[in-house]
Length: 316
Ligand code: SF4
Ligand SMILES: [Zn+2]
Ligand SMILES: [Zn+2]
Image (cartoon, rainbow, N blue to C red; front, top):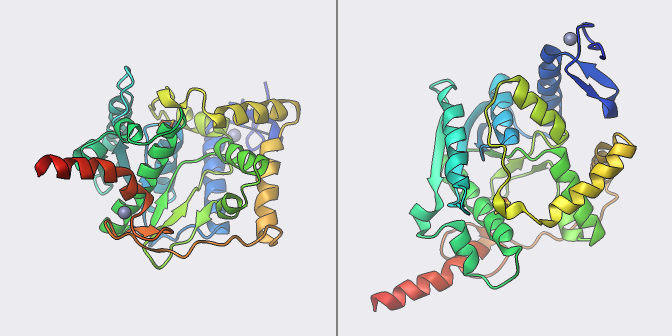
């Protein structure tokens, strides 16, 4: 048994990659202080910002919400019911974890709940079926819907920052995929903080991007956060899981690999070692008014266009 580096009590976690073992209290303090440092380093937000945290019911987003409130930031939650059932009521049960978590927060903190099918008449799997394509389409449509709706809600309700709970395992896998295929445009945009821009894209921040999944899970368990442990049924077979497996095996033989990979990438960006990507000129979508790189309709409105056209025909 290792001893806590700070107080010599029995440790609850030994982080080989940091050569650091800590007891419960010091681990919680460490996570919160490192998060604050990361927020400041990447100029994510200030105490007077109004932050909207996208909460899925999983450990990362619920931990993020708790950490931001503990650090004294103004953070409300947004739960999007995507209508994923797949025989296990996935969205419904995830929402129950979020609501239960939010009930124990201060009455000044709000949880916004958005039901995609209530607003657009279709769940995310139904929207995915509108699109031709292989097995991967559910996740790409889901990502599109989530980005569109998060941004819409933040704009309409006056939030200045959108925060998501992506962890290091997520970020390293995305980076690995982008490097493998040399997706220069995505590499340029991959960042723990994306600033707002004039045509209505709200600033985005990923304050937990430097923590291993094992660390955010330990934080959630120590803080008694009850969270949805099952993965989304559509994640089975996802490329990101295969990339994570490769990175995990490298991490096992050489602790710290993922962190070093991610931090080296961020340093390269800071030192302008990556080409400046061409961000497409953004304009407002003709239907919903949100920012889009394409002329006419944004990708979200284009996705829903066949269903709208069919319902218009039905009315004629
Ligand atoms: S695994 Fe895919 S479908 Fe499921 S929540 Fe994530 S992005 Fe959406
Ligand atoms: Zn200690
Ligand atoms: Zn649009």
